[in-house]
Image 1 (cartoon, helix red, strand yellow):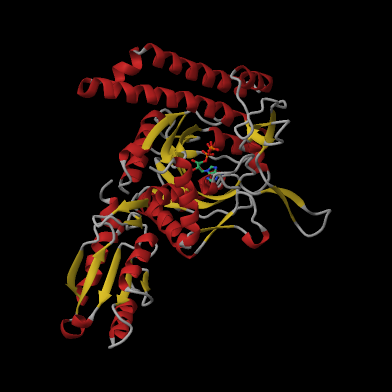
Image 2: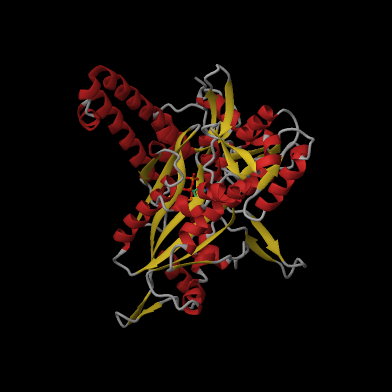
Length: 513
Ligand code: ATP
């Protein structure tokens, strides 16, 4: 059994070895929490983005997609609340000089108590066997109930203190819980301070004319400020959505989890504009729809869970996360937020322009309410990549490393391999590759023995290997090998396109939603 830390290290090194993710500016020793996507990573990332775009934009008659600029007028961030409130509480350890997010230290403390609950459940499950009733056990077992109460009390006190800006109480909580620096064990903490996460920059050539700007910390505001332009030019009727994908920037305090928390990352967001009063219904609708999207990729229902927010952001009246089981435990992958009319009303106030929708059915104008779904593309990449990487024991006692990417997302759909580098086989293989290129991203590989080439493609996540051999010369058939089952079939060259399409086509995957 590999432990979680080893598994995570394996994920990072595999991502590098197979051309998925590199550290940014590696030759200069890298830049903290900034990463580059390499030749395969760029394809995987694009495929995830396309899969989201297809499901969210193109398959919905009432959702359109835009591409707003990263730079926005600085008043945007005053209006949205980011200048005043987009802060994280930070705390330094005086001995180790390490910096932490105070809320994360407390949450991790609670996660440890939760792990104790899980252990109790596991023990009881073994003891009671089939008769075990988990819900009843969680509600009645004295020890478990106490653990849970402790978690609830801690998290709600933290939420209240953060809400009231009572940072001294956050520090007091850390001391009462006897939380120590995870790296050194020291409990010698500074006060808790607020730290704004936005990156500032300047626009304009001369010092007198330059203007202070921010790099956007979320893509959502580009949608809000364009709300009326899109609604009018698209003649859209409520309910409707505006979606976009793009870069966002946050000067994260602690960023040590590979592409999970980056300082430059990409979001895929959709703002759904609705009639005030219908937000509960739409909140539930989008929770369910987004979970179905995740499940359609077949990465195991047990790896997802909802987590309701204790502390609501300044704009929300309800919010939850879809959490995914990453190699370091369950963590936020996507947020679903009921944002009320907060953003549009704020932009009305700060811009002096009306941002209202005239509802022909009600014969009146109003500021719509908004339901947001917001997922990090890089986090989704990490979810897919880490979940897919497996070491498989084979019947002959050997192991193979396979990247079992959902085939719709795999960077390379098929590798075409001539069995040997002579007798005209490479020419036929290249011809097949040239033909399949029109429909799929394919690879041609003639180096090494065919078994080694299969292993390389398995580790790269390629769903199909197509081998051209001497029989091909006589009957125009090839062997097609499936990555996951390793099964091989003899098929006609002319059938390849359909066989691959059936397996990798977005339609067949999204149909599962
Ligand atoms: P966290 O609590 O992990 O800091 P958040 O609640 O601030 O995240 P949101 O503002 O809701 O995140 O952003 C929506 C999504 O954007 C998140 O669910 C996550 O997938 C992604 N995201 C946010 N911050 C980062 C980051 N620093 N690096 C990568 N992805 C991020």
